[in-house]
Figure 1 (cartoon, helix red, strand yellow):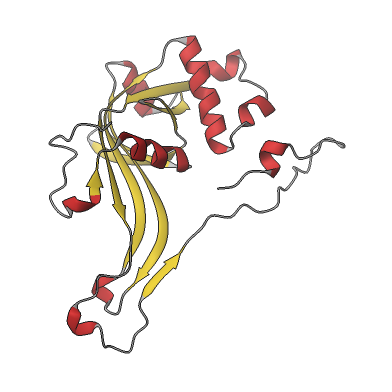
Figure 2 (cartoon, rainbow, N blue to C red):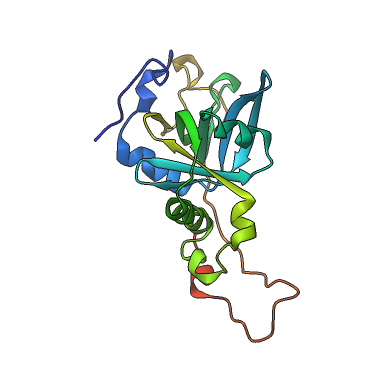
Length: 216
């Protein structure tokens, strides 16, 4: 299955790198820890880093009920552009011009609205916690009434979506191939370090399996 290509999701250049495959879009969104949400407030563009979570074809964001943008979303929704990028490698070419990165990125456009259903809000908040470390929502206290009241959850239907991917070696010009410069790809991989207990952690609480086994 694929998302439909539309006027806002078809690029003007390097179209061969862009796709609309639903499974690929979901995989990139699910792997990324942070997204960036762009919107306009008082006539000025704002881009903020956010935690996000996907449930089926719905992308969830959250923030304080006091945030200006989230207050705007209560009245008819908030037009947003949400992006995520995963960097897989550094592409080092013989020429400075052809240096690049291998990456996977998703752009989602649309109107984000406030989640008002308590059950959907609870599912979204659990998914946001599990998006940081899978299984973490079951290993921590659920939000209480005060915390729920202080948190706004937005939902963005995944409808105008595209995924862009670059893979492979440098694309050096033919006349540069004999130059005496190293060219290739430097792969990048995320690695989790040893868990560091909080200084006020009660004695006898072991590192849980979902933390100990976590891999980026």
